[in-house]
Structures are given as C-alpha cells and as structure tokens.
Length: 250
Image 1 (cartoon, rainbow, N blue to C red):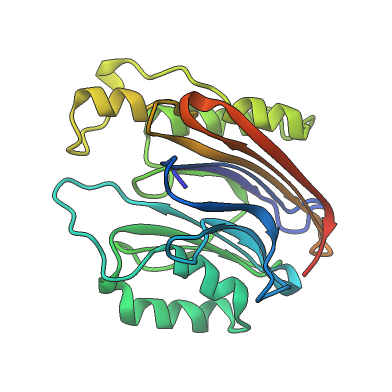
Image 2: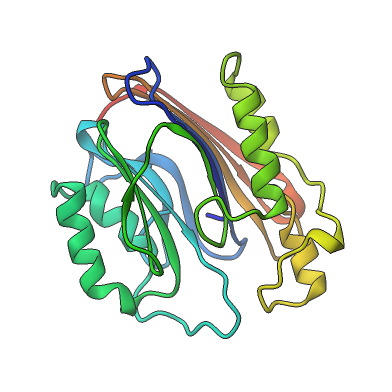
C-alpha cells in the first residue's frame, strides 16, 4: 500500500473514512477483498505469496492498514510486513498490547508505517518513531512518515478534506485515480533514480510490471459497521474488477 489518506473524526456518525491505493508488482499473486476462510471475522484483500494484507477490517470494529517506507540502501526484512496488519485483524489483543509485541520484533521488518484502530482510538506506529494516538483530523501516509510532504500525499489529503461534507464513494475513487505525475523539482529522493521517482509520484501508478493493484474506499460508522469498495487493476492500469461490501461487521 503506497498511499492512504484518511479522516478520523471521533464522535462523528462516520468516524473513519479511508481512501487508499496499494501499489505492487502485477505478478505478485493477490486475493481481492473478501472475508477470509480461515478467519471469517477478517475482511481484506490478501497477499497470496506471504499470507498477509495491506488494509482490512477485523471483528468489533478493528481496522488496520500499512505502507512501506522507501529508504536508500534499505535491507530486506526477515519477515513480511503484511503480517503486521493480518496479526492485528486476526487477533483480540488491545492496540497497546499488540504494538508492544510489534516493537519487540520491529527490527525483523523492513521500514513500515502502521495504522491500528478499534472504533474508539486510531493509533499510528512505524519502524522509526514511537506509537502515537491520533487526534481528530485528516491525515496522509505514503512511503515516508505520517504527513510527509510528498506531492501526491498533499494533493490527495487536500482532496479528501475538501469533500468531507459532500463525498461519495465514486468521488473518492476518482481522487485515487489521479495519474498526474509531480514536477521534477517536487520529487523526493529515495534512492530509486529520477525515472522511477517520476513513475511513483502520482497517486495512481500504471506501467507494464508495477503499479496500483487496488484502490479501496472504506467508510465506517459509529457502530463499527463498514462499507468497503475495492477496484482491482492489472498492467498499464487496466481495470480487472470491483468488489462492494455494504454494512460489513466482523
């Protein structure tokens, strides 16, 4: 998952609104959004190579999402980062208990950002900074820290904030479909070279081998019920399918 913008509004009728793109190699096998056979309380896409996920819901209003941190010279992790999301959704530990366990083994993962929610709290943690509960607000994550000023994050976060009073699933999917690259002068330097920085600078990425595999919109109400929509894509951004789940609750 390479771009997540979200509104956290405790006490609101719809406290959590999320719009997210997962970027990955098209060849990596993936299961679309669905309840999991082995953990029926979990609703998420699934990485069939390592068994984890990038965004999903668990029982009792549990929510988790992940992005990778892109750093020059970063070593591959011993464990898949997708298990950080899956472990929380499949389990019953509190956020604090779960993050204590993550901290003990954090060095086994390449860089990551992690969001965990339980319907009452939303907490941000990463491989580089201590966990922090989030106050009400509109936030963004890409492949650096929370609210790092990357062009696509700033643009998508502003787009979400502008439509919070009058949004639709379709309008949020359109926000995620923005394929306009950033200007070269605005690009971060994450050690992948200028051509790749350009490719990765748009909210929606399309190429022959790597790009946006899924666009997901999640709206959760105050009772923990969620509406999820996921669009799946293949090479060059070709649309493969769409899944809609209304009033899902684990």
